[in-house]
Structure formats: C-alpha cells, structure tokens
Length: 289
View (cartoon, rainbow, N blue to C red):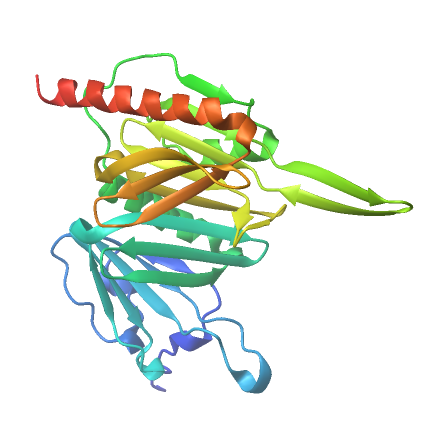
C-alpha cells in the first residue's frame, strides 16, 4: 500500500476554521497547546503571480481566551507573532471586492492579515468568536430607545450594521452620514467625486466605526469595520479642521480613531459624545451599585 502524500498547505486555496488538533495542517508542526483554546483560522497564501510568487504565505491565526497567536508556514521564515488580548486596542475587518484583511492593533503590535474574500464565511466565523472573546457581552442590559443622529441608514450601511451587530446586542447610539456625490463643471467638462460614508455605533459592549473609506478614498464596493470595547476608550473629543469636523477617540494604549464628518454634522457629533458619556456613566452605575 502506497504511503499517503505529505501535506503541503501552500497548495490550499480556501480558508477554514480549525476546531481541534486533528484539523491542524501537519506541515505547520504540532499546535502549541489546547489550554484556553477557542478557535483557529487557516488563511491560504495569496494566489501566485509572476514567477509563482505570492505576496503573503499561508498563516494560522489561533484565538485563546487570553491571546492571539499567528504562525506563518515554516517555509516562509516569517517569525511567529503573539498578541495578548490585554494589549489589544481595536480590531479591523475590511473587504473591497476580492481583497480582504483582518487587522489587529495592540499596544506594541499592529498586524494585518490579508485574504481573498472568496473565503469570507470562515473568516466571519473567526471574527464573531473574536468579538465574543475580546468584547464579551455586557450584563444587566435594560430596554431603551436608541439615540439616532444624522441620516437614516441606507441599504449598504443598514446591511453592514445587521451583519456586524450581534443578536442581543442592542444599539444604544447611532450617528450616520451617507456617501455624497459632488459634480464640478467647467463649461462642457465635468468631474464627479464622492465623499465616503461613516456610521458610528455604540452598544453596551463596543464602539463601532463602519465606513466605505479606505486610505481616504470612497470605495463603493467595499466596507471597513473597526470596533473596540467601550472600556478601552480613554477620551473622546470633537475637533474642527480646515475641511471637516473630526470625532477623535483615544484608547488607553495610545491608539486613535479620527472620524471625519462634514461640518454640517458638528451638532450631531457633539450630541453623540454627550450620549456616549451619559451611557458610560449609566453602565458604570449598573455594574457598581
């Protein structure tokens, strides 16, 4: 009987979640351990380009109750990374057409993991498990009407909110401005440009920023979601710039979000911060009776 061919996970083309050591690709070597293990995600290498080269190798991202470990395929010579959850500031999930990425921003590390969005479903399963580990559900929630600021959600951002917010995680505060089209004309010549849309949400457990802005550019076929547990917000402010109003959220480990809004939303931006401060005080009183 012929021996089984050795595993070469560099040939895998689809991502998958790993629930036990039996599902671990053998060519990565044995898993580090099972204590505190929640789940793991295999991300395949990028499709080969010129001369068979890929931009990034296969990786395994392992979630434990207290840390995230990242291992690249041994042939890549990429050193492993370890990110304690106690140092994690916020996380980011982006997808623009076939380009997807997960970004983990810690006090000492900022790691971006790319993937092809044809593998989106297993990535989403990992993302939801990370959400419930990093920003665990809050206790003692009471019913309350959400504070809705700005414009009603459009189809794109309404779907993004439903996709991202967990069942049983009510939105307490919402601020939305949609993408806007501007047309400039010079005689018979005209130019079209878009201002990206932004949605801010506050629940009892998280602050979320959902946008179709990537590197300052509007992406009609993409979306970027960032979130952080509300307990990590160190300060928040509303600042005027030369072209817009910025909501700035500073996290306890020095991470910063800068959310640009059209100046006409300055009142709504300040109202969002006031509601967030009030809600944070209510949660503190509930948890410290």
